Image (cartoon, rainbow, N blue to C red):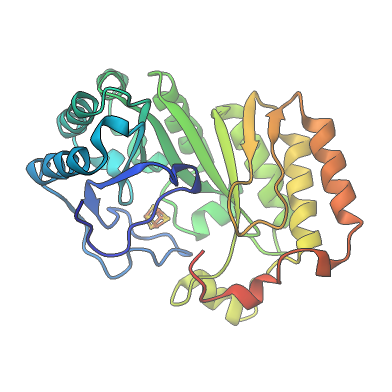
Length: 294
Ligand code: SF4
């Protein structure tokens, strides 16, 4: 396989074959993100992508079970291209269980449900979507490109076509200044959308971003482990579900996971137990991780 630049994938795709379908991100405006800041977005040619699938077949045989299409927002590719890639992967890997890709709410709504159904039929059956927050103020300030109402409509739209949706929230993205609004707004938005999965990762400033500057300028205060857990507790209290909450990212202070609403009491107990522990029992403070690739 040939890769250009640093290739990112969700933690849950650690075992997946990574096929780079795009280079960079067509949005490239999120205030906390530097992943593709110096990369001009382009789609790779479908021929190149299919050649990479052939290379993967030569290397791994037909053992591949999951494929992740990198980079940012492959969901922005035309429907016909995604169908062609999906069918080519499914043809080569008969044991394939799913193909996934990133797609933020701004792009998911740009295809009709009929187009999404065709894409799902070709094997692309799960989308990972970074929302980060449901707090209207923070969502606007991080330049995610959607309002909460637009995000709900977009998530419902794609799930209505039978595609599984995994939505990412960023613990601490609103700082201590708006942690409560962030938790409550995110719970409200995601209770309305009810994605299949909600995945937490904790905000660690990326150097060179506006959101990092906000921290260095003293306008955004990073959360301690206890503050992050209190924010997560409020989220868990308010999320109605049905959904699966996961914390499958190394940046988190605690692995809180379970089905909502059924596992809410267990998750709250787990958080309360963790809140009894000293700060030294958790990973190092976020301030010490800045500059590390998380
Ligand atoms: S949509 Fe994703 S990859 Fe693109 S700028 Fe925002 S966070 Fe970064």
